[in-house]
Length: 119
Ligand SMILES: [Zn+2]
Image (cartoon, rainbow, N blue to C red; front, top):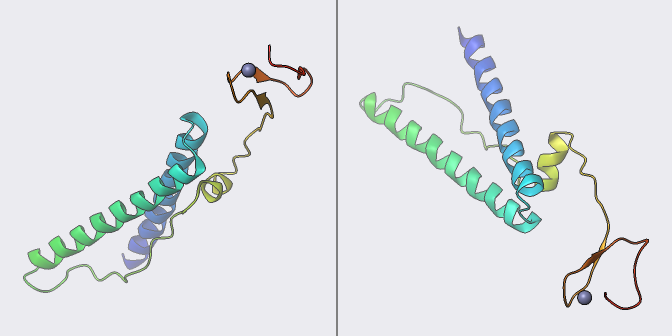
């Protein structure tokens, strides 16, 4: 019984880590959120998860009339703190397409068709 509980905790940590990586990668790659903003989201998600765990711990402690019924070690969450780590964990290699953008009108040019003057 104890072994199953440990396996479940490991699976839950792995699943949580994977879901956070998917969230970060989706925000960055599909929604276009910047690296800095995605990194902020990752920090915020970690705080939310930590508070949820602490809330569950407190509720467990209260229900057991002063004695915790679940004795888990207080391990730090091992969640990604930046989008590079999140995408790396998911083995995502983004395809980067380089182009040039006019700073005045934002017209986009490929590297092969760059005019001397913006069209
Ligand atoms: Zn222009």
